[in-house]
Each structure stands twice: as structure tokens, then as C-alpha cells.
Length: 122
Image 1 (tube, helix red, strand yellow):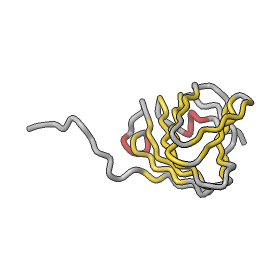
Image 2 (image 1 turned 90 degrees about the vertical axis):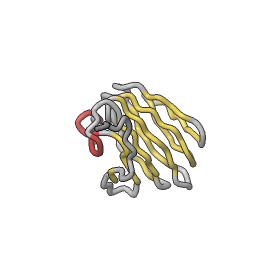
Image 3 (image 1 turned 180 degrees about the horizontal axis):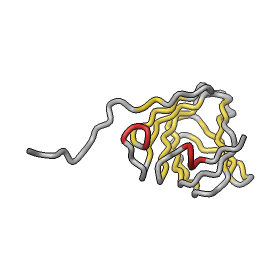
Image 4 (image 1 turned 120 degrees about the horizontal axis):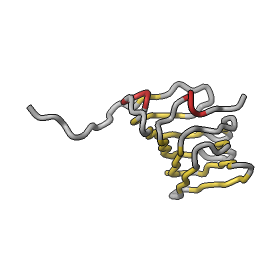
């Protein structure tokens, strides 16, 4: 009897949102119970933003299309198609899309994203 050495994710978990943002978690706590890494495909609509946060995980973002704004410790950074960034854990950051087109991107968190570890501000 053989054990597979791989897993193909065919049905990512679609995280319920109220802000129009699409979040499809392919690997992580919600889908595969992986605590070490989360990988999500996201589409942020024009005008989208979320509160500042100081997460307990490193977050990598790769922009597939559009642009995304990051405010990192007070510094505004804009990423465009084909660019990527790593934001260290325990750094205060805000993510937004103040632009006119949707932003499609991949986000990878290590350890895995968790609402208990994101520390969003009210």
C-alpha cells in the first residue's frame, strides 16, 4: 500500500468576508490544518482597505495584477504587477487597494495566518 507524497488542493476554503475581498485559502489552518504556512489567493476590490495590524507571522505578498498599498510602520509602499514583498512579523502594517482596478495577489504567511495572531486594530 503506497502513501502519496503530495496533495493537490482542488477546493480551497473561501473565507467569508463583508468587504468584497475574495480570499481563497489553499493551504493553512482553515483548509489543511497546517500551522506552519498558509497560502491564499486573493482579489482586493478597488477602494478596499483593512485596519492596521501587527501580526505574529511573516507575510509574503506577490502581485499577480493591479496594485496594492502597504503602510509599514508609517511608510507608504505600493507594489505593482510582478513585484513581491516580505513583511516581518511584529511589524505594524495596513493593507489597502486605493486604486481604480482590482488587485489580484498571493499571500503566504509563516507560521500560518490565524485571527488569534493577526492583532487587528479596531
